Image (cartoon, rainbow, N blue to C red; front, side, top):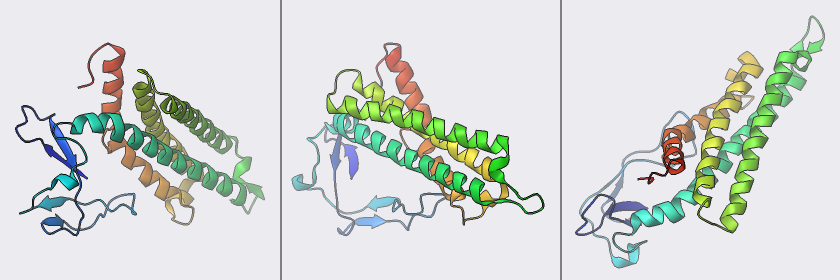
Length: 221
């Protein structure tokens, strides 16, 4: 899917959404994704050259792209990525709990779970995860019967989920110590993946600004 200014647009906000198959002549993906995290991602820059877009490829009427992005794309993208962030949190909690139960000190016969500071970190990870997941659950119920407040719940749930993913995966790295840097625990992977959501538009900074503008009576854009 891509967007472009509508024919005869008076501003950059008057856009049109359309789709093109990647195999169509003139659509040229520029390499493959090779990033810090989200290794299963298929994102890549794309250039369009010498092609035209037919009416069958339009996803919106001309000039209605922004409305579709705000009313359809943004809500579903937000709750979907929030759910993904919670999945990373749950994986971090599970991996950390398993490591604390299974690793220990040969000389004393104790396990990592016997250390109060590590148990505390795991508890904080679990509570933060469930708090944010509860907010997402509330948002999904709001989406089932939407009203004027629903967009704010969508923004809140995405912002909370992305912040929580950073917090929880950071605690997982600290709780698991040097072993967290090894790939056998899986903690370093969720730590890397959790960073992607923070900078993926709308970023956490964007979400905070949108919420602040809405709460003070300003338009979002």
